[in-house]
Length: 463
Image 1: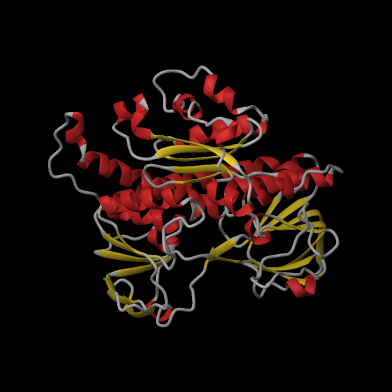
Image 2: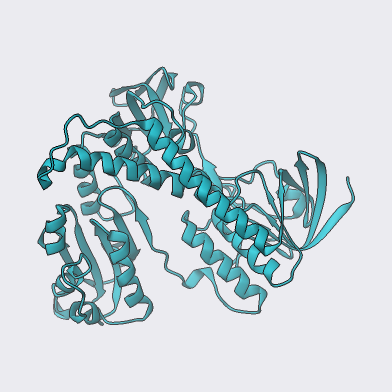
C-alpha cells in the first residue's frame, strides 16, 4: 500500500450531496478530497436529469411544430434530426460540467479522478491515470449513487440492451424502441422518442402506469401516451427476450403477447453502486438490496462515516440528495436535522408534467385517515385554454378535522411550479383557505389553485 494522504474530509463520489459538501467545507478552510470515477459534477448533469430533460425539450418542440396548425401557423414537412438534438444535449451538458469544474476550482478541494475502493476503515485506495493513491479521512462520506439495473430476464443481457445513458447518446433514431419498465424514465423517454419519430412500446409488469400514484393519474397518463401513438403493454410479466438491440429484438410475455423492436431499453429500476468497493473492509453495512444502512442523520455503521444520496436509500431525486447535504452539515455542527421529518416533492417530465407533494388518496386510504378531496380539470383554467394545454387535472387532499393541506398532485402544464406554491403553504402550515382566497395573477396556471381549493368539501363530507 502506498503512503496514505490524510484529509479532514474525504468524499467517495461526487454527486449532488458530495460535491456540495466538498465545496462548502473547502471554503470553510478544511482539507477536502473528492474521489470520482470520472463524471465531473455527478450523474445528474452528465447522464440523467439534465441531458434527459434537454432531449425531452427537443421532442416537445418537434411535437409543437407538427401541431402548429392549431395556432394558425403553417409548417409543412416537419421532421426531427436526432443528431442535432443529441449535439444540443451534449452542449448543455458540457456547459454544466464546465460550471461545476469552475466551482470546484474556486473552492479549493482536491478532485481525484479514478476508481476507488475501501481497503480499511476510513481508507480508500484510488487507481488513477498516474498511479495508485491511498487516502484517509478524519470524516468520510460515501456518495456513489445508483446505476440502471438490468433485471434477470431470460435473454435480456444477451440482447445488449441500452439504458437511459446510451439512449441519450444514440446517433440514429430507433425504428421501434421497446422499453422494459413503465416508470418515470420509461414514460419520459418513451414519449420523447415517439415525438422524435420512433415507434415506441412500453412494457410494464404492473396493472397500470405510475402505480405509486392514484388510479386516475395512471389512467390519464396512459391516455396521453396512447393518444400520441405510444403502445403501452400492462400486466406483462415473465418476459423472454431474443435478438440484439440495434438490430432486431423480440420480447414475449407469459400471456403470449409478442413485441418486436429495433432497440430495447431497460428502465425497470436502479441498483446502488456498492458492489466490490470494500465496504466490508470499512465496516460499512448494507441492506439486502445493497443500499448502505444509515440512521436518520445518515450515519453508517462505521464510526465517522456517513452515506448520502441514492446509495443510502434516499429517494432518487437530485433535490433529495441536496437535502442530505443539509442534514449532514447540520449534524456536523451539532444540529438535529433528520430524514424522518421531511417531505420530498417530485416531478415527472412527461408532457404535460406530473408533480406531487405530500400524500395522495391512496396513501390516506391505506392509513385509514379521513380526508376531504378537491379536484379540478385543467380545461377550466383560462390560461390552459389560451395555451392549448387543456389535458390533466389538479387534485388536493385536506384533513377532515382541520384545514391543513395533506397533499397535492397535478398533471398539467407547469405542474412543478404550481406544486411549489402548494409546498410553501404546507411548509408554512397555512390553511387551504389561504390558497383558495389568495390573489394570484390572471391569467396564470397558478390561479387554478383558487378554483381547486374552492371545491374542498365541508368537514362533515369528508371521505
